[in-house]
Structure formats: C-alpha cells, structure tokens
Length: 347
Image 1 (cartoon, helix red, strand yellow):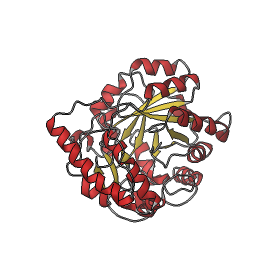
Image 2 (tube, rainbow, N blue to C red):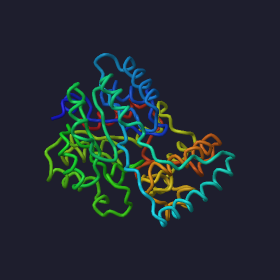
Image 3 (tube, rainbow, N blue to C red):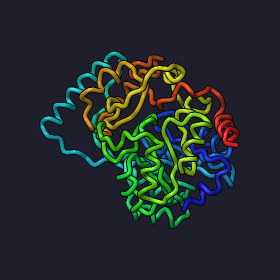
Image 4 (cartoon, rainbow, N blue to C red):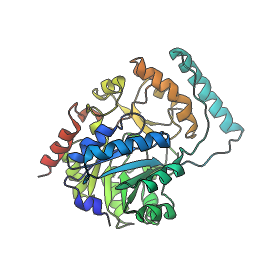
C-alpha cells in the first residue's frame, strides 16, 4: 500500500515541524541518512514553499525521496457574542505582550494557508510524498496526486479519525499519540476529547482494528528503544520530531534550544495558535492557556509577531516552545547521527 515505506532503508520519518525548525538542510540530512525527510509547507507562501522544495531536490540526489506537509484549512467560524468576547479578551492580553517587545500584534483573521494553490504547485512539480495535518484530504485531491505517482498520508489522533481518513484512499496514516510535541493533528480543535488522550501504543492497536493501511507512529519517540516498541506494535515506521530539534540543521531558535535541554514539563495549549499543541511551559502559555478560544488561524496570526520578537530578543517567555514529552532525550548532534543511532539500535 505504501511503496515508500517498503523501500526505506531506515524506518524513520522526519516530522515537518512548521514554524521555523523545518529546513531544507534537516530534511536532506534525514533522507540521505536512509530515512524520509518531510518539509513543512504550512504557514509559508506558495513561492516560499516552492523555493524550499526546489532547493531540496539536488541536496538529496536524483534517487532521494522526501515529502511535503500541508495544513488542511479549518472552516471559517461564525462568532457569536460569547466567542467574540473570548477572542477580545485573548487579544487584549496579547496586546500587552506586543507592547513588551515593541511590536504590533498580528491581525486575528482567517485564511486557508493557500492550501489549494500549494496543491496546484505540487501537481505541477511532483514530489514523492504529500502529507496532511488537521483532517483527511478530499478524495479527489488524493486521486490527483496519485495520478502523478505521489503518495498521500494524513495524521490521525483517534480511531474515529482513522476510520474517516481511510475513506479518502490514502497510502498510509501517521498515528499521533498525545505524547507528541507541536500541533496535534486532530480533526477538531477540542482540548478535552478523551478519544485523543489514548497513549500511542494503545492507539496503534485501536487504529489497526479499523484499517489495514500501513501506520507511521508519532509521539514521544526519541530513541531506538521507543522506536522498537512501536514497530513491534505494528507500525511500519516511526516519525521523530523533537529528537531533531537540537540538531544543527534544524532552524530551532536559541531560547527554544535552551528549554529543550531542560527537564521542564510540557502542556497542551491553544494559547499560541487556537489549535491544541504541546509545548514546554513558559510565561505566555501559562497566562493564556485557560480560556484560549478554539480559533485557528486567528490566534496564530495574532501571536506570530510577538513570538518572533521574543525569540529575537533571546527571551523564551513568549516563544512557542513546541516539544514532546520526552524532550530531555534530544541531543545536539547532526541529524544523520540521530537516524544512524536509531538504525543501529534496531539491529
């Protein structure tokens, strides 16, 4: 069902990690070491995404494989009075953070991240793999990409999502446990859905009960022992993200790197973007998690200049410190060495 997974020398997928850590160099390092690197296409213009894809091709060679990840758009909401009040309260607090760093808060507006235009670009310039986050792509989009020889995967966080996704004609599912860092791939913006709190190893079994699609396990996987566990539980490969954040090829900001090297706790929050995401606790997360409305990409757009200014100042207080639960196991070593260490531990 997934020739890419069948051919991989090392069953490691590099998570896309939109928002800075994803770089051409990181994806290339993972792919050339025998894994499969995935570029983040989300939160970029079509041209910026295209430039990164075209830069990656020669970096991995003619026979190399890589993927591109896109965010499916969240439906544009219609706010009632309570929703508008919750958004206004959140934005008022963000305004004080913007003043702290001397920047203007971003506009809290909806957009679809140019996702259809990005699909059109990937149709005109085919790649090995396109993966999706936040839902199941329409069947016609899957068929359009399949016609070019492009595989299509999406992320699921529950058995119900897996059942829905399997109906789209996909080649594989990325099964993301709640231990994962960064944005949850859930199809909704809820924080308290018990179906999305099932630990990864148990979730793999539940997903296998509703589909025979190949599975890629994701969430809290930082070493060969953890990867071996999910492979034994039926996954065909493991997707690692946090394990690569300290690598020199990653675009991880300095305050984020410092926090990753600690053993500080993580939490799932909508404070930064309006969608559930796991990060290391810091001042902005703690202040804004309670009451943060489920409004993506509104909050993401509004907070972006503040997060960027915080990182540029070397101050972690308002940086989205995305990280999985096992972030303290990450090492500041080349990405190829991460892949090789996992591969060696599996034999």
